[in-house]
Image (cartoon, rainbow, N blue to C red; front, side, top):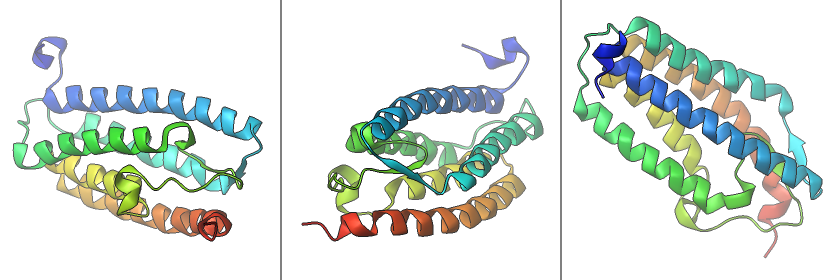
Amino acid sequence: MNPDALGFGWAQFVVLLVAAQRLGELVIARRNTQALLAAGAREVGAAHYPLFILLHGSWLLMLFLVVPSGQPADWLFLGPFVFLQIARVWVVASLGRFWTTRIITLDAAPLVKRGPYRVLRHPNYVIVAGEILLLPLAFGALWVAILFSLLNACLLIWRIRLEEQALAGRREQP
């Protein structure tokens, strides 16, 4: 497929692919969230969630709009971004029915300690931080990489604090 034939460049094509992936993940997350809540789970920090949707949507929209259609991809950055997509699938698969885009905790459930969770406490956040940095760099949008990385870092500090509080009781379980 040649994105130029559609009237936009490779950057816009990749952004559309990433947007489609994220929309698919939102469907999975919604299904898992509903099932967990029905099983007695609770949501923590719902007020911050719309800010993440705004951040991620704005990041993709900004890339779509500001990268010139003829801008070639730099595989030094795009290659690792593609690798992060594989790691992202690994995170989702490792959490299984517990994976959501919100902070949903089922107090009676043990914490997941398989996959990347064996070595990292918050692997998904490391992956997302890498994605937000690498995709703009792959298309020469340094200021987008810096701006959205800083905004993401601010939101992640808030979110990780909330998540750690929500999981504190579960971390103490054997």
